[in-house]
Length: 202
Image (cartoon, rainbow, N blue to C red; front, side, top):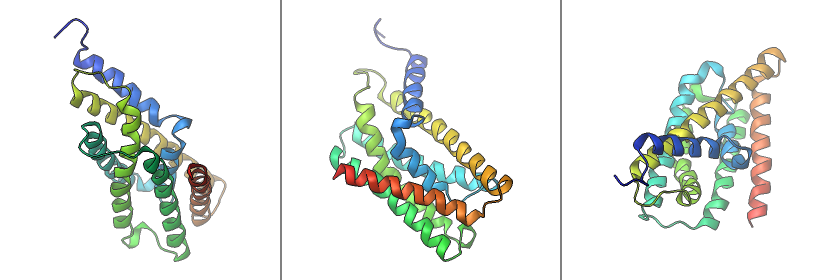
């Protein structure tokens, strides 16, 4: 290893921080809103299902992140920036439909949630790649950089998820807001902001 190369621990530390700060940041409002919409129908007691859901999202974006960084799939940055708020809008609309039909994850809808998390993760992974590509160290351990970045993203997502669940607990248990009303509010917020982002992109 040459003197200017980084050790594995250096790479992990650097790219873990890059991944974490990229998702756990108000500038990542589009990715955060997707998590809000994805988790709107769930509560604190559903944390195991939500971890699986977030893991499905991580698997999806990890695959396309690697493929994009390796130049195996082409990236149209303008198209991806438009598709990301579209994924938020679709998820929010699905939530509204679920609430309207008075159904939830217990009747098997979780399968659709997992499919959306995995599939939409592909699109968000392409968005992550646009950011990560500019930070890569040429000649360094590419797998280590990708792995560390994804771990940082995952931890950031879990912390965001925890905050959403705590807010849900506060509003539904302490302030006695009906569960469906709260879920509809979160979904409506995500829908409104995603619509603004789509219009802004167009």
